[in-house]
Image 1 (cartoon, rainbow, N blue to C red):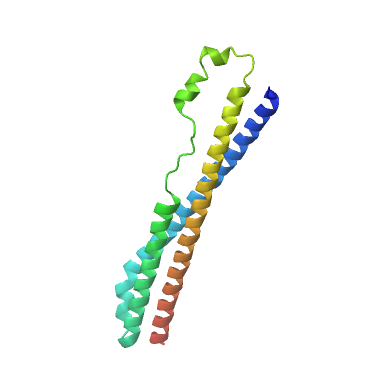
Image 2 (cartoon, rainbow, N blue to C red; image 1 turned 45 degrees about the vertical axis):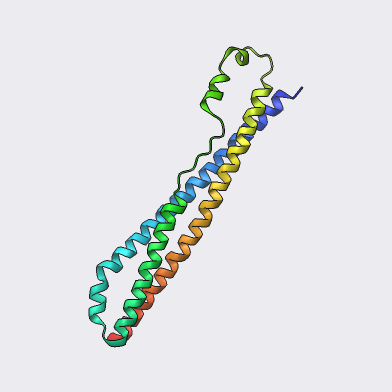
Length: 170
């Protein structure tokens, strides 16, 4: 027979770990939203000022600036898309159905002297849910990294285009 108190302790610890992993995944999704927001801001700035920037440049510099601004806009658009669709993809952590939970509220379980089978099932459910939450957090981290690299490369292109424009105006 299993030690009911030990299993209950493991269930509690498993719940804490699951909560930590869910908070981590949510924090990463928030960061993804922030990257998407800043990417959209810079994309709007490029779009709103491209005509003015290009009108100030001439000749080959104008063509280079146009190409660099297009590259910047593409990188920022990729950053936004990855942050929105990769990081903020909804995920389910539940591995137990509501019917199964309702079953545990019936008389055979409520009147049972030993609840260790329910605790064991809870522990297995927590294990699966925690693995799902960890995978979700790891996936979000991967997509945040991709989004962040695209964002930084887009900003580098913006700085290069502004630098070229400044060189032309001097």
